[in-house]
Image (tube, rainbow over all chains, first blue to last red; front, top):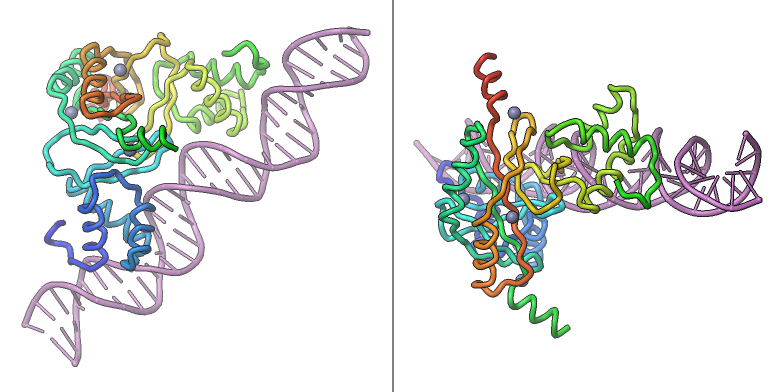
Amino acid sequence: MNQQLRMTKQRAAVAGALDATDEFRSAQQLHEQLRDRGDAVGLATVYRTLQALAAGGEVDVLRTDDGEALYRRCARTEHHHHLVCRSCGRAVEIDGPTVESWAASVGASQGFTEIEHTVELWGTCADCRASATAG
Amino acid sequence: MNQQLRMTKQRAAVAGALDATDEFRSAQQLHEQLRDRGDAVGLATVYRTLQALAAGGEVDVLRTDDGEALYRRCARTEHHHHLVCRSCGRAVEIDGPTVESWAASVGASQGFTEIEHTVELWGTCADCRASATAG
DNA sequence: TCGCTCTTTGACATCGGTTCTCACCAGGCC
DNA sequence: GGCCTGGTGAGAACCGATGTCAAAGAGCGA
Ligand SMILES: [Zn+2]
Ligand SMILES: [Zn+2]
Ligand SMILES: [Zn+2]
Ligand SMILES: [Zn+2]
């Protein structure tokens, strides 16, 4: 996390929880998880910390279909996309080499500038598929 | 709109407002727009109508960065994506021929099933760029 | 056209995620 | 330890969206 911010045990707890998983988590999930673990942190602080981490590019954010924000600490900070399990949140980082250039050229050809793109894949991971079948 | 639903003037007004623009609009924007025009429609009805239209695949929905839902009546009902002006909402429908197969193969290679993808491009349209420069 | 029925409407309450407020707390520093 | 300043957190506020339910009206048969 950013060095010009004070390192508090709350921030360490949130950052630690993110580091410990490869799943996308909502602010409320993290809040509950920390409380259950004994590292209780105020909900507002969880939101503020996630906001700061996202602003610093240290965590990735995406939105579910119903508007909830999910956060994940990715291994790399360079631009990339995700394949996310819609059931458990597990995610893998992926590249779309051709997508990058395609996005830029399509945008420019329509007279648009400052092009950005949103590319996320959603699916059901092997584990969730297995437990759904078993149950 | 769907023929097994009763055609009311409220539904006609919402559908008409969507037909009259190529811009993505929020439920609240449409509600205000209709009120200002004299075709006042209850906010709840606007939401319900948009929901019905979206469920029937007659309008496209996407979410802004802050989670608000935007709706647009597209010319085609087949699968496609959008290039959207982040300032005014104007959008053009685009295809990503290679993206479609790429998404499916990446998903499968990671053991994920029931793959879906979100691909949207955001930019500033020529008009908004011009007025920003002029202002 | 007239009723009847059953869907739809809309003002309002409610919900869920997120942000704001502000008095109190605690890192960093001397 | 003591100061200063940024951080915390319980609760209120905010905001988009959905639920409630009595009143309104679309569709239809008489
Ligand atoms: Zn899963
Ligand atoms: Zn990309
Ligand atoms: Zn524009
Ligand atoms: Zn596609």
